[in-house]
Length: 228
Image (tube, rainbow, N blue to C red):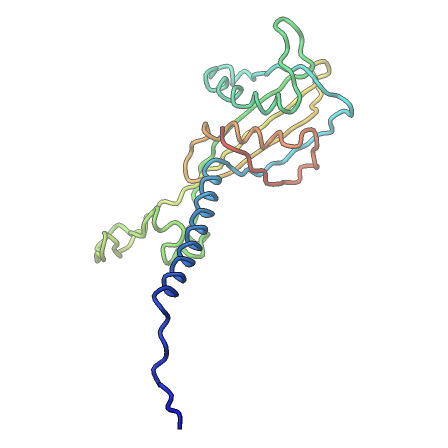
Protein backbone atom coordinates (compact mmCIF):
# COMPACT_ATOMS: atom_id res chain seq x y z
CA UNK A 1 0.00 0.00 0.00
CA UNK A 2 1.27 3.44 -0.92
CA UNK A 3 1.60 5.93 1.94
CA UNK A 4 0.81 9.56 1.20
CA UNK A 5 2.78 12.32 2.85
CA UNK A 6 0.21 14.48 4.78
CA UNK A 7 2.55 17.49 4.71
CA UNK A 8 1.61 19.82 1.80
CA UNK A 9 4.42 20.81 -0.46
CA UNK A 10 5.75 24.33 0.05
CA UNK A 11 6.39 26.62 -2.91
CA UNK A 12 9.99 26.89 -3.87
CA UNK A 13 12.05 29.97 -3.08
CA UNK A 14 12.13 30.84 -6.79
CA UNK A 15 8.32 30.62 -6.98
CA UNK A 16 7.86 32.86 -3.94
CA UNK A 17 10.34 35.37 -5.35
CA UNK A 18 8.54 35.43 -8.71
CA UNK A 19 5.18 36.00 -6.99
CA UNK A 20 6.64 38.85 -4.91
CA UNK A 21 8.08 40.52 -8.03
CA UNK A 22 4.71 40.35 -9.81
CA UNK A 23 2.93 41.86 -6.79
CA UNK A 24 5.54 44.60 -6.52
CA UNK A 25 5.17 45.39 -10.23
CA UNK A 26 1.39 45.74 -9.84
CA UNK A 27 1.79 48.11 -6.90
CA UNK A 28 4.37 50.14 -8.83
CA UNK A 29 2.02 50.57 -11.80
CA UNK A 30 -0.87 51.50 -9.49
CA UNK A 31 1.26 54.05 -7.64
CA UNK A 32 2.34 55.61 -10.93
CA UNK A 33 -1.29 55.94 -12.07
CA UNK A 34 -2.29 57.55 -8.77
CA UNK A 35 0.68 59.94 -8.94
CA UNK A 36 -0.11 61.00 -12.50
CA UNK A 37 -3.79 61.50 -11.65
CA UNK A 38 -2.85 63.58 -8.62
CA UNK A 39 -0.46 65.75 -10.63
CA UNK A 40 -3.12 66.31 -13.29
CA UNK A 41 -5.68 67.39 -10.71
CA UNK A 42 -3.20 69.76 -9.08
CA UNK A 43 -2.43 71.40 -12.43
CA UNK A 44 -6.01 71.91 -13.59
CA UNK A 45 -9.31 73.23 -12.29
CA UNK A 46 -12.88 72.24 -13.13
CA UNK A 47 -15.49 74.98 -13.38
CA UNK A 48 -19.23 74.99 -13.95
CA UNK A 49 -19.82 77.05 -17.09
CA UNK A 50 -23.01 78.72 -18.32
CA UNK A 51 -23.20 80.70 -21.55
CA UNK A 52 -25.91 82.85 -23.16
CA UNK A 53 -26.41 84.65 -26.45
CA UNK A 54 -26.64 84.09 -30.17
CA UNK A 55 -23.46 84.97 -31.99
CA UNK A 56 -24.04 86.26 -35.55
CA UNK A 57 -23.29 83.52 -38.08
CA UNK A 58 -20.08 84.04 -39.99
CA UNK A 59 -18.84 86.84 -37.76
CA UNK A 60 -15.17 86.13 -37.04
CA UNK A 61 -11.94 88.02 -36.46
CA UNK A 62 -13.51 90.95 -34.61
CA UNK A 63 -11.20 93.43 -32.96
CA UNK A 64 -11.78 94.00 -29.28
CA UNK A 65 -11.02 96.31 -26.39
CA UNK A 66 -11.75 95.84 -22.70
CA UNK A 67 -14.37 98.12 -21.20
CA UNK A 68 -14.21 99.07 -17.53
CA UNK A 69 -17.12 100.11 -15.36
CA UNK A 70 -16.62 103.20 -13.17
CA UNK A 71 -16.26 101.01 -10.09
CA UNK A 72 -13.58 98.94 -11.83
CA UNK A 73 -11.58 102.06 -12.69
CA UNK A 74 -11.12 102.67 -8.96
CA UNK A 75 -8.97 99.53 -8.69
CA UNK A 76 -6.85 99.60 -11.83
CA UNK A 77 -4.26 97.11 -10.56
CA UNK A 78 -6.86 94.43 -9.82
CA UNK A 79 -8.73 94.98 -13.08
CA UNK A 80 -5.51 94.83 -15.06
CA UNK A 81 -4.73 91.48 -13.44
CA UNK A 82 -8.15 90.17 -14.49
CA UNK A 83 -7.75 91.45 -18.06
CA UNK A 84 -4.25 89.95 -18.38
CA UNK A 85 -5.57 86.61 -17.16
CA UNK A 86 -8.43 86.63 -19.68
CA UNK A 87 -6.49 87.87 -22.69
CA UNK A 88 -5.28 84.44 -23.87
CA UNK A 89 -8.77 82.94 -23.67
CA UNK A 90 -10.28 85.91 -25.57
CA UNK A 91 -7.72 85.75 -28.36
CA UNK A 92 -7.85 81.95 -28.60
CA UNK A 93 -11.58 82.41 -29.31
CA UNK A 94 -10.61 84.42 -32.40
CA UNK A 95 -10.64 88.05 -31.23
CA UNK A 96 -7.86 90.45 -32.18
CA UNK A 97 -6.65 93.39 -30.05
CA UNK A 98 -7.72 96.67 -31.60
CA UNK A 99 -4.94 98.86 -32.95
CA UNK A 100 -4.19 101.97 -30.92
CA UNK A 101 -6.44 104.85 -31.89
CA UNK A 102 -8.93 102.60 -33.73
CA UNK A 103 -12.50 101.73 -32.76
CA UNK A 104 -12.98 98.06 -31.82
CA UNK A 105 -15.70 95.86 -33.27
CA UNK A 106 -16.69 94.64 -29.82
CA UNK A 107 -16.18 95.74 -26.24
CA UNK A 108 -15.56 93.12 -23.57
CA UNK A 109 -16.41 93.52 -19.91
CA UNK A 110 -14.83 91.21 -17.33
CA UNK A 111 -15.52 90.53 -13.69
CA UNK A 112 -14.25 88.19 -10.97
CA UNK A 113 -15.44 87.64 -7.43
CA UNK A 114 -15.09 85.38 -4.40
CA UNK A 115 -17.94 84.74 -1.94
CA UNK A 116 -17.58 83.02 1.43
CA UNK A 117 -20.30 80.78 2.81
CA UNK A 118 -20.72 78.80 6.00
CA UNK A 119 -21.65 75.16 5.65
CA UNK A 120 -23.62 73.25 8.24
CA UNK A 121 -21.93 70.10 9.51
CA UNK A 122 -25.11 68.27 8.57
CA UNK A 123 -24.24 68.91 4.90
CA UNK A 124 -21.55 66.24 5.25
CA UNK A 125 -22.92 62.73 5.90
CA UNK A 126 -19.55 61.64 7.27
CA UNK A 127 -19.23 64.54 9.70
CA UNK A 128 -20.02 62.43 12.76
CA UNK A 129 -16.71 60.62 12.34
CA UNK A 130 -14.71 63.59 11.24
CA UNK A 131 -15.49 62.77 7.62
CA UNK A 132 -14.02 64.72 4.79
CA UNK A 133 -13.56 67.79 6.96
CA UNK A 134 -12.38 66.13 10.17
CA UNK A 135 -8.62 66.26 9.48
CA UNK A 136 -8.87 69.87 8.32
CA UNK A 137 -11.12 71.40 10.94
CA UNK A 138 -10.90 68.97 13.84
CA UNK A 139 -13.70 67.76 16.08
CA UNK A 140 -13.17 69.89 19.15
CA UNK A 141 -15.97 71.60 21.06
CA UNK A 142 -15.29 74.60 23.24
CA UNK A 143 -17.09 76.33 26.10
CA UNK A 144 -17.97 75.05 29.55
CA UNK A 145 -16.42 72.11 31.28
CA UNK A 146 -15.24 69.29 29.05
CA UNK A 147 -13.26 66.10 29.23
CA UNK A 148 -10.16 66.01 27.00
CA UNK A 149 -9.66 62.88 24.93
CA UNK A 150 -6.31 62.34 23.17
CA UNK A 151 -4.88 65.06 20.93
CA UNK A 152 -6.97 67.87 22.33
CA UNK A 153 -10.36 66.47 21.36
CA UNK A 154 -12.88 67.20 24.05
CA UNK A 155 -16.56 67.34 24.86
CA UNK A 156 -18.52 70.18 26.40
CA UNK A 157 -21.12 72.63 25.18
CA UNK A 158 -21.38 75.84 23.14
CA UNK A 159 -20.26 74.09 19.94
CA UNK A 160 -17.80 75.98 17.76
CA UNK A 161 -16.46 74.73 14.47
CA UNK A 162 -15.20 76.21 11.23
CA UNK A 163 -16.47 74.89 7.94
CA UNK A 164 -16.20 77.66 5.37
CA UNK A 165 -16.15 77.31 1.62
CA UNK A 166 -15.47 79.93 -1.02
CA UNK A 167 -17.21 80.25 -4.37
CA UNK A 168 -15.07 81.74 -7.12
CA UNK A 169 -16.64 83.13 -10.28
CA UNK A 170 -15.58 84.96 -13.43
CA UNK A 171 -17.84 86.57 -16.03
CA UNK A 172 -17.41 87.72 -19.63
CA UNK A 173 -19.82 90.02 -21.48
CA UNK A 174 -19.23 90.83 -25.16
CA UNK A 175 -21.13 93.73 -26.76
CA UNK A 176 -21.29 95.05 -30.29
CA UNK A 177 -19.40 98.33 -30.14
CA UNK A 178 -21.67 100.22 -32.56
CA UNK A 179 -25.08 99.14 -31.29
CA UNK A 180 -24.24 98.27 -27.67
CA UNK A 181 -26.15 94.99 -28.12
CA UNK A 182 -24.99 92.14 -25.85
CA UNK A 183 -23.86 89.30 -28.11
CA UNK A 184 -22.39 86.77 -25.71
CA UNK A 185 -22.27 86.20 -21.96
CA UNK A 186 -20.31 83.50 -20.16
CA UNK A 187 -19.77 82.61 -16.50
CA UNK A 188 -17.46 80.06 -14.92
CA UNK A 189 -17.52 79.17 -11.22
CA UNK A 190 -16.03 76.67 -8.81
CA UNK A 191 -15.56 76.41 -5.07
CA UNK A 192 -12.86 75.46 -2.59
CA UNK A 193 -11.61 75.91 0.95
CA UNK A 194 -9.37 78.92 0.19
CA UNK A 195 -10.37 82.39 -1.05
CA UNK A 196 -7.52 82.48 -3.57
CA UNK A 197 -8.63 83.21 -7.13
CA UNK A 198 -5.57 84.75 -8.77
CA UNK A 199 -4.00 81.35 -9.47
CA UNK A 200 -7.17 80.11 -11.17
CA UNK A 201 -8.18 83.18 -13.18
CA UNK A 202 -6.60 82.10 -16.47
CA UNK A 203 -8.04 78.58 -16.30
CA UNK A 204 -11.49 79.89 -15.38
CA UNK A 205 -11.56 82.33 -18.30
CA UNK A 206 -10.38 79.49 -20.58
CA UNK A 207 -13.35 77.46 -19.32
CA UNK A 208 -15.75 80.39 -19.80
CA UNK A 209 -14.70 80.81 -23.44
CA UNK A 210 -14.58 77.09 -24.18
CA UNK A 211 -16.52 76.17 -27.35
CA UNK A 212 -17.15 79.83 -28.21
CA UNK A 213 -19.47 80.91 -29.82
CA UNK A 214 -21.73 77.96 -28.94
CA UNK A 215 -24.10 78.98 -26.14
CA UNK A 216 -26.48 76.18 -25.08
CA UNK A 217 -29.07 78.48 -23.51
CA UNK A 218 -27.56 78.73 -20.06
CA UNK A 219 -27.40 74.97 -19.52
CA UNK A 220 -24.58 74.37 -16.98
CA UNK A 221 -21.69 72.11 -17.96
CA UNK A 222 -18.36 71.24 -16.39
CA UNK A 223 -15.16 72.29 -18.12
CA UNK A 224 -11.66 71.35 -16.92
CA UNK A 225 -8.81 73.64 -17.93
CA UNK A 226 -5.09 73.63 -17.07
CA UNK A 227 -3.81 76.20 -14.59
CA UNK A 228 -1.42 78.61 -16.28
